[in-house]
Image (cartoon, rainbow, N blue to C red; front, side, top):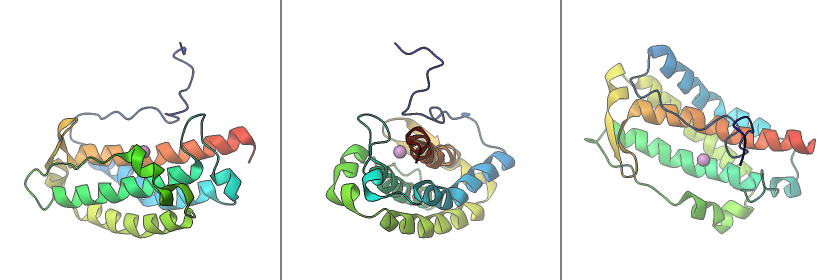
Length: 180
Ligand code: NI
């Protein structure tokens, strides 16, 4: 059994946890900043890696670096849609998807990472502009998540503020361990 001080390689920045209350203006701004800076951070994290390095799992039994990058594009494409639904529909239901199976699809295992880095550049520009347009009450709009229950736009913002850095750390930790 792991001691509490042993870092879990799956969660290099810690597991996601929500503050479970409306975010302050500054808390929202810091999460929006994390979403704004993510495309350049993940691009920097993979800069200079060769194909065999991109095809290395970030941990034993984990996704390859390439799968991680394509997963982030898959995840954030879904996220972007959830935010748009939240402010245009009455308590929309979050559509879950099988992220592990998506990461095993042939394109996610083989395509150059640039395809997803380019998606993230455009997607995050749209996403940040959307978030910056929200009035305070729009961050409290509800969504229904089939596995979690009722959540708010703030909760989603917390989740995706965490999510990008979580996966960048998978890549940067691997590079550090491997001396890349
Ligand atoms: Ni993820």
